[in-house]
Length: 416
Image 1 (cartoon, rainbow, N blue to C red):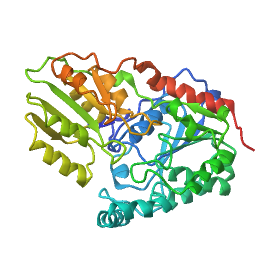
Image 2: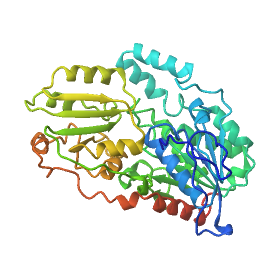
Image 3: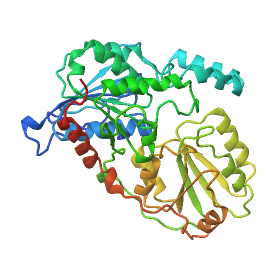
Image 4: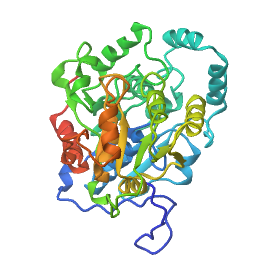
């Protein structure tokens, strides 16, 4: 993702702007090739782990010669700079075109939330599940109900879980969807997101309903299993991490800096990934340093937190514009080390740890409870004994991930 050059087609004529996917070159025979429908809320050119997840998988499946239909929200950013490739068809939600700045409804909801005190927000969101309701796109369900297929598989990718809701509703209307192998992918456990830590327990009954409709649930980490096993049989849950095309990774030569340089890339979330404790710690240091932040979206409270910390620290806190993933990994590969803020929840693992591992730099990972001040001070002096160890990048190879999804399709249907 993030490629800017517009390649030429084989005929020499221009193709639509965006990424040109590789021509199909694979060992698959014609009988092995499947028609796979993927429904997702995020894709290239957006810069988010969920967009990368969809883009990488679509790329690899098309590369293998599968026919892929990708259904996306009707957003201006996708239409202006779409994925293209032999065997790939992109269709859009029938909802009204969403401009790059978001819908008026989303902007209105953000303004309402900013005016409500925290306790009132929590009370409202406890009963009104933001991930399922506010993010529901009825146009996805409408478009799905119209697709004629036939499909060998339907893959519904969250976040948000509202994508699964649209697919499940369309499955009741469209036999072409029901006859396919259906897979619900969960990037994180649902209804435990950045907006509300808890919701009315009845919302979890959606998982039980989806267990009757989808043949398989896929989740990225084993430690999240307890979030799903009350609702679906364990033998229909598969652990499939996010996939990456490791062949595209490029590191720049590393040279130690005169003053320590460390970096963070990602987002911050209240209660889940809140860096206040770390900025407070940096203000106690009397050593010089540079802390590079690559944050693709900053809530106002975190923007103010960073601005205030910049005035308190001895070193430098530099806030940078977000970068395409390949460029970001290049930039991270030049830092002395990188830092990761662990989620306060124990059932999700930030995908940025894989990006960090690909940068080749030592990783210090912690949250407010696990932070080791002495280990961090040692890292500032070049002692990385507190770094994360044992990240096996091969398990995230997109070829291996695509193999797993192909295996699920070959296993066939599990529901009636």
